[in-house]
Picture 1 (cartoon, rainbow, N blue to C red):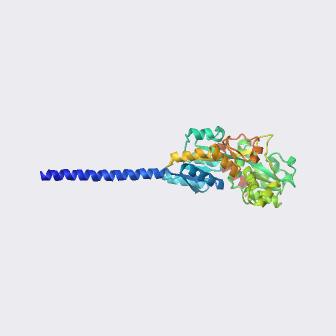
Picture 2: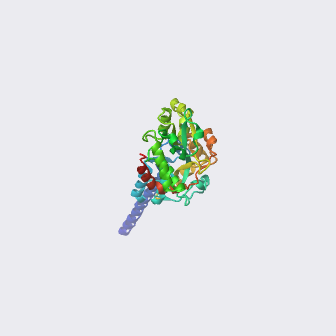
Length: 353
C-alpha cells in the first residue's frame, strides 16, 4: 500500500514539475513573441534625415522600434540573398526603380497585400505584381545660372549636347544610379544608338570631370565652373530650405527647367519600398509601409525631403506645388533597371567618367 502511495505521489510531483516547466516555456515564448512584434528592420539605401524623423513618429504612435541597416541597394540585396530565410530584413528601400526591380528579380521580395498601402500608392508608381511601390518621386531636370543663361536657349536634354554648351555642362559621375536610369530611359525611348549619341555629346561638353553629388553641381554653377547642370529636383528644394545661408543664396540665382515638355517629357524616378521575402516581422513591416504612404507620413516626407509625394492627399511645399504640373516621360519605371548594364558600357565608351 505504501509503495502504491509512493508511486502515485511521484507521478503527481512529476506531473506538476512538467506542467511548471511547460508553463514557464510558454510564458517566455509569449514574451519573446511580444518583444519581437515591437521591432521592424529596414534595409535602406536612403540617407535622408527626414526618414529618421518619420521613423521616430511611427515609433511614437505604435511603440514599434525601427532599426535601420544602411548600404547601397546592391549590397543590401546581396546580403538578403546570402542570409536567406535567416535574414532579419523586413522592408527594403531604394532610391531607384531599377534597383527595386533588381531586388524583385533577385527573389528577395514578396508581394505587398495590404489594401491600405495599395490604396495609398497609385498604380503608376507600383510594380505590376505589387512586389514594390514608390514612396516618393523626383524629376531629373536642367538647372542653370540665371545671370549667364537665357532659358529660351534650353528646352530639351538634347540641347545640352550642342556646341553652345561646350565646356559649360556639369553632372555627377557615370556610377550614379540617377544618371544610369536617365540614360536607360533614352534607350527605352530612342534606342541604344541615339542614347549613346546623347551621352557622347554630354561627355564632350562637360566643364570638368564629374565629381560630387547633385548639390555639388549647383555649387559649381555658383562658382562659375559651369553654367548648366543635370540635377534631381529635390536638391533645389532642400537647398532653398537649408540652414546654410550660402546654399539658400545659391538657389536664388538658379533657374529650373523641366526638359522635353513639347516632346517626350521630363525623366522621372522613385524612391520605393519592398516587403522582404523572409520578413520576421511582417505585420509591423506592413504597418510601417502603410504609415510611410499615408497622408501624414507623405506630408512629413515631402516637407522634409522636397520629393514629390505619391499620395495625393499629402501637403506639398509651395515650390513643389508650383512645379507639379509638368509632362513626364512615358517610361515604365520598372524597365529602367534592365538597361543599367548597357548604360555602364555606354558611359565607358564615350568617356563619361
